[in-house]
Amino acid sequence: MQLNQIYTKTAKGLEEIQTRIHKLPAHLRRLLIMVDGHSTATEMIDRLTTLGDVQHALDQLASEGSIALL
Image (cartoon, rainbow, N blue to C red; front, side, top):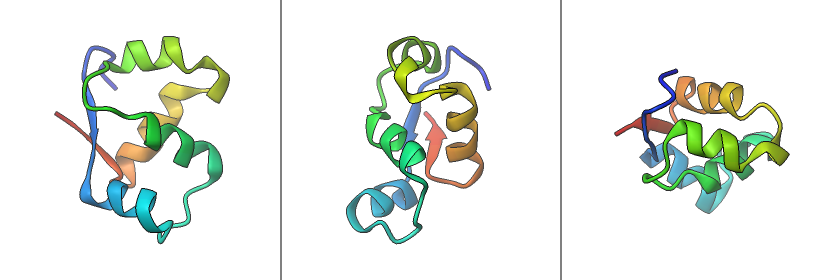
């Protein structure tokens, strides 16, 4: 993960938010909702510390196709 990169939701991520079809765990779904297409990974990690290991969770969301780099 490059910490200065910006993530955006993919079609799969938007579908998960709307329908929960992919059945993401709650902590990943909460983070997915917070991905805004404007904040860098570093900003999200700093801002969302209450969600646990944000860096690892972003990696998970990226690897399963719910978010992608801009």
